[in-house]
Amino acid sequence: MTAVEVEPVARAGQERVSGRSGRTGSWVVPWLFLAPALILFLYFKFIPMGNALVMSFQDVQPFLGNQWVGQDNYVKVVTSDGFRQAAWHTVLLAVCQTAGSMVLGLVLALLMEGRSRRLSFIRSAAFLPVVVPMAVIAELWRIMYHPTADGMLNSLLGLVGLGPSGFINDPHTSMASVIATGIWRGAPYDMMIFLAGLAGVNRDLYEAAFVDGASRWRRLLHVTLPGLRSVFSILFILAAIRGLRVFTEVYLLTNGGPNGSTEVVMTLITKLGLEQNRLGVASAGAVLLFLATLLLTVVVSVLRRRERE
Image (tube, rainbow, N blue to C red):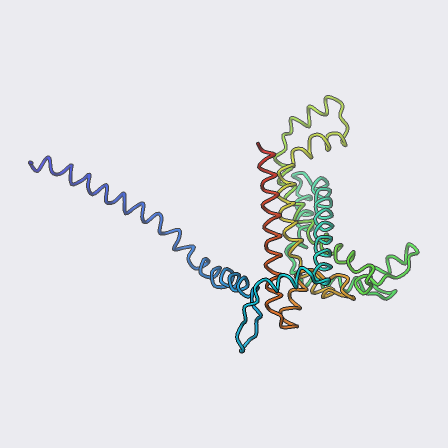
């Protein structure tokens, strides 16, 4: 074989080697960038989740050794009146906050739809509750919920002739007060998602409906809402998961009180694990909550897929 014939063969071999190394490099580089975050997730999230799953089958006794009890912790959780009541409060809170946030968010989105600079400023101002820390929001609403007659909200109620309310200090109104706080914080987030969805609705359909003489209500009912179907499903998943995992606002506003009227699963798990040192039972409750959230997500995803088909 002459030198002229050897050169193309050598060049082809170098190209194959460089192509193979290039593919290897393009596969390795993204994982190198993701490695720090993956390590943090593994150490602070996935390993604790695995430990919680193991602890849910054990009677956890720090410094004395854990004892395997099988499904006893799950039996205690399921048969506990306190857990069933907390689960009911969690579902009630999730449903009411999800519905209220979506309805109010849709109304705000319809009112603020447009490209005006003034609307842009108003949308930014309305979105502030989402970026404000929950601790600040809870303290703000705690001040507004002051149960005396000179409290902020009670002063407004007095202007219309209504008596002072205990709000979060009254077992009859505490749940509604927590729900109102959650709706106030969640509605601006839903508003932004709805605004993005409204921008994708076909404007020709509005014009055709207007030419046909459809009123604003009919255009909303037959054009806007069908065009936002995918947005509704996404928001429902996010809001439902957020509602099932509700903890911060309840913990900061009432800590499950008064008299357990706002106790939810997350606050109950916290009390079982950190206050009563029943870590095995608390882990079983956490696993059940995770399975409920996973089941809800899978069911909604399957329903969405069937609608697309």
